Image (cartoon, rainbow, N blue to C red; front, side, top):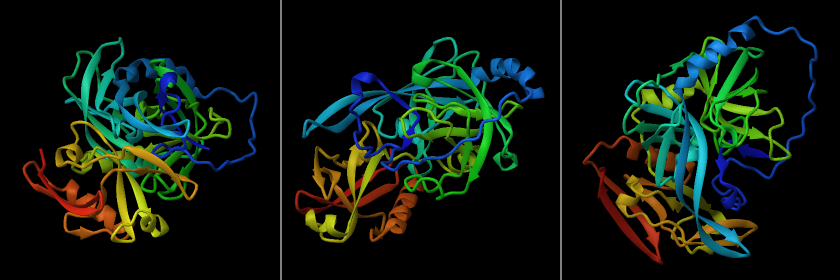
Length: 366
């Protein structure tokens, strides 16, 4: 299965059962592996301890708290979650790259640096379709140093790499491997179509999500996203979003975060829900303090199994927004792009279906 590499406290093991908004899939990938034993150590290996000491000052643990809705014993139950991922500081003013699935609906985010000091952070940018997010630290602690983003276009299959993160919450853990493949956008996982992935055999486990993968010059060449696994644990197939993609989407463009997870509604399901149109997006979850909450979007409060899938119910269903009528995925992305281009004080407009009525929501960008 496709498994996100973030970690959820075991007390919340039932969270997001069925993978409604996780990087998971019911499909199984079975691959035969060839292992080379007795290979001579790389010349770079001697430099690894020094590299690790240098880059560790840029690697952080990301802790996200929030609320979710899960099915337990056939009943929809609201739960609180505590999620642990990783991240990397990329600027002197406190910007941190991480994975979108770690923080997208977080009500509260804190970052722990090397040595254990904790700093609050807020989400300022997120691109769920690329599994990337950008955090802004409330302050920059002394001693922390930003990492350098490398040029992932120059990365070659077979190149030695290493990952630093917090698998199962164990801070600043090092794993080493190689780049084992490159994958263009929309070729690995349908739910993350915008991501260009580097594949690696460096060990990735829950808690590594959002952490950096470095080349042997100590440059960040990717942000950890997910693994492919039959067992649910690491099996040698890890995927990281390329650094060039992260730079383009999170740093070169104006960052934007909606604070919403969406559920696509179309075809027969739209008929079941008695929608006035055949394509729309239902609001699944809304983070506290997010632009979506400020606008007044209502999250779902129930889950029902319809056509064999868990469908969130009770939330607003967005029919149109920012002058764009929703009729397919392209129109939905266009609406989000227009929303993302707004600046503080600009007006946000959405048309939603709520409790059998069509309502116009209007608000201002904070």
